[in-house]
Image (cartoon, rainbow, N blue to C red; front, side):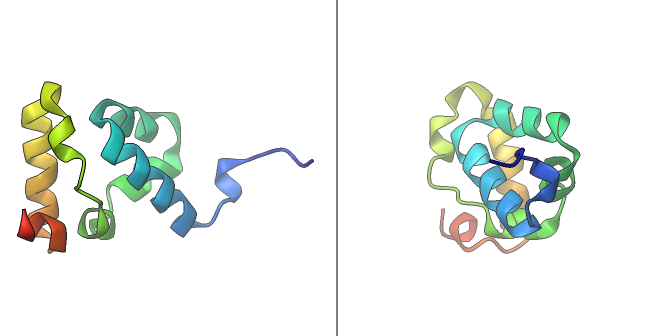
Length: 85
């Protein structure tokens, strides 16, 4: 088996991974950007916020201000779930 290297994954796969992390924990979302430059770049793209899954954002009760900021950015960039919520 070949060595696994995050940098070798296509951007669409990195986007999906980061989206899953973002819906689970805002702290992990921030840590992912610090740990790997590819996640950092994707996490700053407008497309990421337009397509982020917001279903589990209410579970982030410890980080209310960060969640509000994240949801507001998603809303401003036209994320359909943010507009609905």
